[in-house]
Image (tube, rainbow, N blue to C red):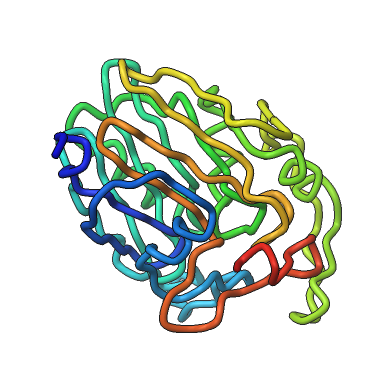
Length: 243
């Protein structure tokens, strides 16, 4: 059996941290979803939190887990950020909620071999995944997303089942690089990075990011386990895409 078969495969979604070890196999859509170990589905409303004496919400403790050298998972209850650190700086998958941007940037700055954030992937438009877009864009990070995610971020969105309308994000928060189809790839700090669209599932702009070298897949809000997934039908989510 080859070394690739024996490698640990980590599946991470966009909420509380999760991982599982299993044999590597040819990735199919159903196999990708069926073998994923996750936790709660995405909660999209702005996290209200408890308000402290200074008027700023009292935030949860941000946890940092080392997956292997140069690869870290930063988590709160309803979001994850994956950080790949190397000579080029950092590559992030998702950016957490805006309320946590200060804490997130501080935690990233404390990582070994961290450096500046050069690339940020938005797995979809929800605000608890794209909250640091403005701050990281100001640091000249490249923000990569599916084209539909950029479209949703730039327009008012009424989520009917929440009875809530999200205003458009400022131009500085919008992705700078988008794609529609295919499985683009890139190199970052000597590692291949592959990503692609998961059409009409959690939203109509979901993407996954695959790091073949450590054998990691991040799937954002597409993944839920132990409960029903969140299907945001207001922005193109479809139950058939979760099957």
